[in-house]
Amino acid sequence: MKTEGLLFDLDGVLYVEGRLVPGALEVMKAVVKKNIPFRYITNTSTKSLDSLQRQLEERGLPVPEGSVFSAISAAVQWLEHNGVRRILPLLAEDARRDFAGFEIDEDNPEVIVLGDIGDQWNYALLNRLFGLLIAGAKLVAVHRNRYWQTETSLQPDLGLFVAGLEYAADVEAVVVGKPARQFFQAACQGIGLEPTRVALVGDDIESDIGGAQQAGLQGILVHTGKYRAELVRRSGIRPDSEIDSVADLPELLAALFGRQG
Image 1 (spheres, rainbow, N blue to C red):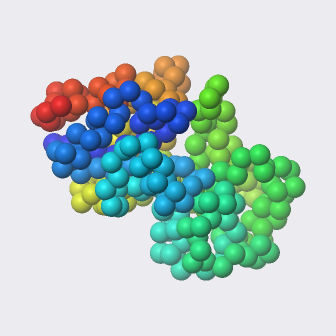
Image 2 (cartoon, one colour):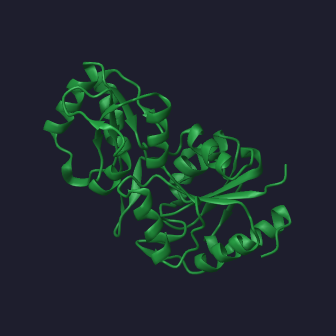
C-alpha cells in the first residue's frame, strides 16, 4: 500500500545531543513544502507541549500548528478519556504544566503518572509508590524505554523503574507513549491517514521501529542517536528500511514511494 504520511522521532533522528543532524532542517522544510502529512512524535516527558514546540522552533525546524504529538499529550488524553481526576504526577516541573486540569493528590491518587524525573529516584520514593499501587492506584507510564542516549553513552531509561514497580506490586502499567500501539494510531489519526499508509523514522529499534510495525506502520531506521548495530541484531526486529541519517530520507522516499527529493 502506498505510503502517504510520515512520523518523525525527534531526539536521535532530527537532532543529537541538542544539535541538528546535518541535512535534517532541509528535509523537514521539503516535507512541509510538498504538503506531506507528518507529525513530530516523542517520548520526551520532561517538557510541556508548549516548551517542546518552542524548542523545535528555536532550532529552526518548521512547526505547523498541531504538528507535535508527545507521550505527555497521550497521557493527558488517556486520563481525560478515562474520567480520572486525582493524580500523582512523577514528572519534571515543566511537564506538569500540561496536567493543570487535574487534582494533585499525594496520598490517595487514582493514577500515578510516571515520567522522567532524573536523579530524584531513590528507594524511599519507590517504596512510597509501591504502597500506593498495592492500595489500588493505577500506574500510567509516559513510556517504558529501555535506554536513552546521553552525551557519552547509552544509559538505562524509565522502563527500568516501570518494570520494577510492576513486578513488586503485581500490576501492569498502562503505557501511553511509544511503543504503545495506541500512541502510533493516535499520531496517524492526527494526520488523517490509516497506519498502513504511514512510515515512522526512528533511531530506537524497539520503541520506534518495533512499536510502529506492531501498529501497522512501516519502520525506517536511522543510524544516528541510539542506533547500535548489535542492539538491532539482538532485538530480532527487521526495519522496513535503513538509512545512515534523516538526510538520506528524500532519496529513500523517491525510491520506495515515488516521492521526489
